[in-house]
Image (cartoon, rainbow, N blue to C red; front, side, top):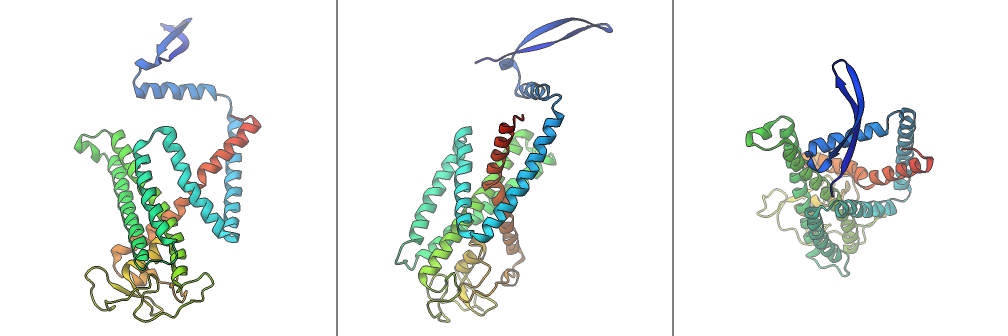
Amino acid sequence: MNTILKVTGYIQDGTKASKKEEVRVDMSELSPEEQWKVEHARMHAKHRGHEAMHAEMVLILIATLVVAQLLLVQWKQRHPRSYNMVTLFQMWVVPLYFTVKLHWWRFLVIWILFSAVTAFVTFRATRKPLVQTTPRLVYKWFLLVYKISYATGIAGYMAVMFTLFGLNLLFKIKPEDAMDFGISLLFYGLYYGVLERDFAEMCADYMASTIGFYSESGMPTKHLSDSVCAVCGQQIFVDVSEEGIIENTYRLSCNHVFHEFCIRGWCIVGKKQTCPYCKEKVDLKRMFSNPWERPHVMYGQLLDWLRYLVAWQPVIIGLVQGINYILGLE
């Protein structure tokens, strides 16, 4: 459907303005850039003279952000379990709503595939009795998603930076296309990185409690043998000083020994900063001596910060818009 835009103005004749004329412009004949400029001009014309109203809206936004942040912090401190569950649900549903609304079918397909595999893994993790191979399956899956999301986020960040420096012109790629590609990769990496960490934490608590070496109270319900991993409950065959073919063996500062994949999943993916058995605080920098592995820890801290933006920021913005609507502010 064609949109006709009426443009009213004055025709300049020499140094004086002559008669007032109205011109009709077919929006379908304009380029996307010209359409954006027209819509931008419309918005400025609509909100001209509303400076006082806009100042009130900014104050409402700042006040709502401060109050919401205080409430969320108190909620997380007093009832962490319900806070984490609601946050996980928000992160699961909010992007899906925008995906369906904006017809982002590629993201929807990836979301469905990720959801199907994660649902299967979570189902296996919550079964009783727990199969011995399930913990390693769960940790390997979430560790794989963690590494893929980390690499995807880095690739997206590099694509954005290359576009800002104009390197996309070397490959004859339009700046808008290169920027869209980089932002898309960055979004995929950050979103799935945040999502899988929450699922990994939930599965880690449930499986460790089921195995019996770990409980929320900090009192183990089983005795840990020196040759048994406290996370998965399976035998350890590789000595700490030896180089493993598939995975190595790690010893924490408390002298408890674990499989590499298990303790990585517990500490990094599952966001656990304590020993699964004795609850002693884990020094990640000391445990991971390879300097290339430390950015993964910092990346996990970044995902914790982004969780607030993904899960709660849209809700807060919607609340602000509701307040503005009730007060008659535009």
